[in-house]
Length: 138
Image (cartoon, rainbow, N blue to C red; front, side):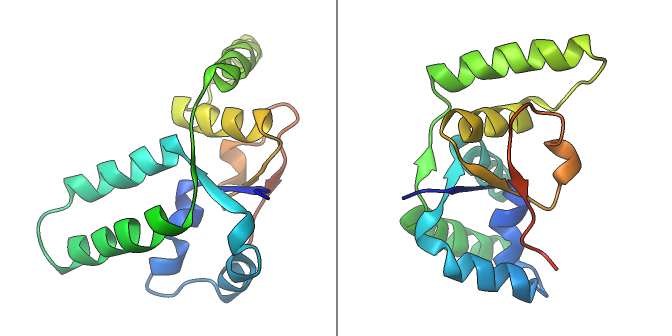
């Protein structure tokens, strides 16, 4: 059963030069309970596509297509998420806050599916109503 939605920063933690050991331990412990948002997949593919040819791009390509895409479900930004996102975005803007559109989409997917967002960027998600956020880093 899926419980956790990995944000883009969480998705890239395992391939950092010095990944956080606690994060890796929790990812391993909850591997079958994790997914990513279609928005996160877009961000990863976009970042990969902008890299020049070379070793870094090859390593990232292999990680995304050989590990991520084959082991993590990609959850869609559907009608329920779009509706929640629209209402929540209007509420936040009225309160003088302007969250990033992709973060709002990720939050909406998590909120409408009852998932916890795993991110090191707590500030990007803290204003979304009813959203549970966790960091798996030390």
